[in-house]
Length: 159
Image (cartoon, rainbow, N blue to C red; front, side):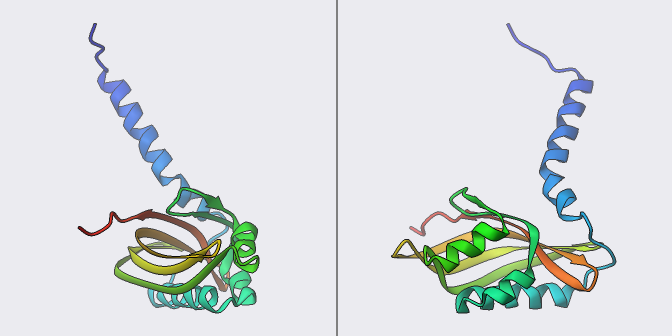
């Protein structure tokens, strides 16, 4: 027996899917205001990479929003405290972080940076190279620009 979906049902499904896909943006927008400066987003992303590779936990504490949702390319999820703790404990060490093929889109007080990342990381004592596609979201909150969301997917190995 074939099931047919009515136009109303299909429209409802599409709307629900769009709402789910945009929910990280909605939660990231909480408490943000004003318009974000595109150059400031690039500088903040550079500062985050520098803080991670030099283990500058004070800078990370200032750059990361308290409501950070960090989805690793392994599908593991961290918040601000657990993300910083993984570096403090030595479990994760970012040695080199580079990005390329980036596009920055601005949505009022949010900056959404997408691109390709090439990271040299030590995880639990094992050195790995990670090539990935990412989405990085920054929110303007008062005078501060805060890193509020990261999602990445590993690229397949080159043949």
